[in-house]
Length: 630
Image (tube, rainbow, N blue to C red; front, side, top):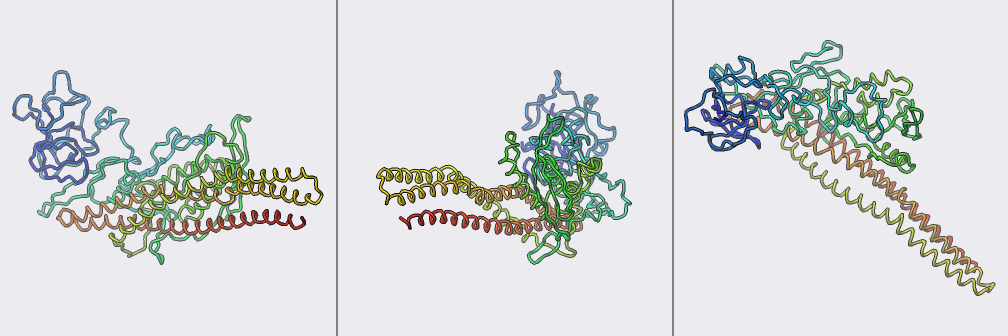
């Protein structure tokens, strides 16, 4: 006999994978165990999918019907069918399923109001229906966007055998949860000076910590007013919108304490929203890459000297330190494009060309970090720039631990955003700008890829083909000179020498061609590589903003249908505006640095091209003058 349930309310599917329900409709369940407040089953029309568990009442006794009738459309696969078939649901529940005695009391009494979301977790570790070890942590549900997750390893892992080929994500404990305030808003240090408790909590039912409210949770008012609905949750819990904490923030579930120093201000500039400028701008140099050893020479690495202009105190960092910093920043700032680091390399890490190339890539990276109004001022970046790890190991580890336990990540990060007061955004205009920028990034990415390929191919030809061809010409001229020397006429000696000099000039021009790419084309390709990393970040940033816009549209539809209060919909729109302000500010900053960088790089490229051809012209002019005395 199949598991059955009766629909208590109408439910309209709005996302792929959901099915619609009609009140009093009988459904067949694939399992009685819910997945974060959702059940899977088949409705009377044969559609299979997910629906809210709070919208149905599980039928505890077998309904009369033909023997062996499994209901329309019920699949014939059950992973846990006992050898003797199913026992009636009115019998004792299986030993692996032990909900609290009152967990389904509202369902059994068939009250007009829907039951609260189920808070029990069945035993077992199977996915997706099991609980136990695979239960998501609060950080997995509401925070930790981006590629990296907070590392919660021991403090000593900084000095472990961690070479340049490893990443933070590879380290043990890389997926551990960070420190978060409780969802009810409690937090140690709530009364500290300079800390403000901010909450976006609405009247959504959250249940226990780490559980999510069922989508479309209806609330029937005793006064007979129309029911109130909430916007649905994204079924893809691995989407960037969910992992970044954007969904939890927009739905009003973020609650935490924000210090003055954690506030990220967006202001209105002449071209729209932009990040507030850094009042103390600085730059940073990266010099003296030096090979270091430890463990009596068994471990080798390259150390770089960093000197920030605002402190003038040098600190030494390895590539793994940069990698750790990137991981922290990518986790903390879901709506900011953190530039990608130069690529790792498993072999040849100590070769001079690779060290030089990596240093140039790190200089570009540091330049973008220091010029970003938000990234340049964040605590973890300043700790990276100013704490001398080699002389004050304790202070370094304390700052490292603090960064890895940062509470202002995930949904709480959005609480730190401060937007212009009384400034409303036109959602259609915002959506149009975002779509335009999305098209721009796609076109720029394609053209950057094409230019990078062309420049790389042209550089390869200069290093190998052009050099070889010019040397062939030079060798041919020298061959002619050697032939002329056989005449042994005194008056032809000047001509022979001039022709031989011409051959040497072409050899030198070939060498100029081979050396030229590192002067002009290589810097262009380094810049393109950096911006291709930026462009790879923006789909996720746009996805967060698009997800927020979708929730606003859904809430407006509920208001029009009389299912949601206007005040609740306005709260969703205000929080969407916060994300939109930050996204537009980041887009503005991207365009600013893009114009600055490409202007500077194209000027450098053309200047180097002019210098190159001046050197070629000089060689040819020197050869020409050799014939004046013939």
